[in-house]
Length: 284
Image (cartoon, rainbow, N blue to C red):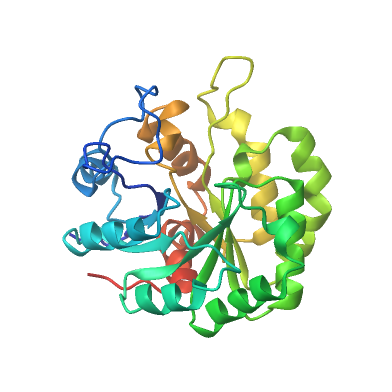
């Protein structure tokens, strides 16, 4: 299964609307997304492009859906790990974290602008900071969710308070230009902190009803991220199947592949080595 140069997709979602309990997301009114997102379906799309494994990022606020994903992943060697969804600052957080981290596939949790949670607003709670310290002590990762200026500023404060915590920031290419420019100062400061990584995920953008296809439109943002985080702290993520709202899987993949052409060993770092360094996943 493993190619000479693997590609690990660090940001995919798994869900099945056909379960008896249904799913909290996506909504059945969305015909693009409201269908089973399974490892088999993903592999059929991504493996022909050279993708050899993926990390699931949990898209449900239901605690037991963490277990559902782990059970699905256990049967699918294509999935090398998952980032769970637990609520920091809750009394039950520690017990939940201990439960799920027993699985070697459980690599961390996602937190930020999702499911009514707001990292920027909640950082003043001692119990939330305690949860972040517990996450760091377990050797697990904090993935951010849906960046904006407030969340990027919050990540800066998180790394001040819990400097030993590894952080991975998602979907920065998708930020609107105004928000991006306003956050550049904080992003450049985060770029100096070696425990902070960023994903080349959410690459495609809708501009006045059109999604540009060529690299030239996306290159400036990809270049800025390269300048900020460098070749050692950037990882690839597709945001599948959510990214289908902007275009098919291969569209963003080909944009990034063209961007990485000519970068030699640095491309291999982005495609898989950096993800192993930050998430500490193991081959299956």
